[in-house]
Image (tube, rainbow, N blue to C red; front, top):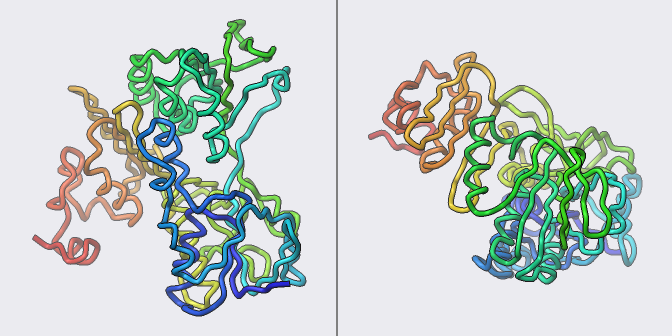
Length: 412
């Protein structure tokens, strides 16, 4: 049995962050990455662009092909972890046991497919989370395919954009009364929906599928939709089973502290499979976004290698575009609201207790990062020119001292 100083289960942004965190402290310890997928680490948000033809299999890689080799990492791809035994510090996987000194669980999330009558009768059905599923969907499409997407969240809408122009018709169904219900307010959702509808995509919102019958879906409101291909994009669930079965504490995600350590000795967790503290609203929840995953992984890697680090600035963030319309959101939508929705703009800033809590910007998102920094750093609004920031985010709104301390010496 091979034993490694550091074993990482999972092969995406959190895993990459962990490797870089380990190597920032320990240049020589043995490191291995185990993954059920056969691919080098890749960026899942780029899958839709792969289907569009805007990128390729090489460019969706999150790090160059030689990243693991350069960092002295052994890769065990197409090797799914089946069980963790914290007592003897082993992981049971396809092919046998692997030992570890420190372990990171970064197994992400899986598509959630709700139980719907007749689902088993649908022959061409796909999810849109992993590369293999997306490639299979691409292969199944024809210029005449009628595609039904169940789910009007980020995954469902990016799927629609990815297959647009490669099929005959796209219909999207969602039980929520608006698109991107977990991301946008009513006004923002209306803008995005109307923009997507101009592309010829049809929505049925406030309802869902009651029953499938091969190539026919009957909705709860009685509407009947005929389709050739089904994509289930209802949502995802954190993969917590490995840690739960080993006796670790889990909720909706794996529970960790600010160093990413779980309740199990020498076992850490990072990425979409974990819960973290959302500082924008003071609650603990799963925040399945790439910047958090990488930062959690890096923090875990440093701590696994004996260094000191913590991740305590998690907030929800989204930066995405649909058919040329861009939007950026961050934080929570609580408190008072500054709103500018005139002349084609859509900007809302939410603030309370002298802090910026969240924002929604649709259209010109070029300087949204300034607002994100305010939320992450929990900058008191009475220390900046908030009126100026509301109208035009600019460095001039910050004091000379703030710019020197927080912005790397930019003081002009």
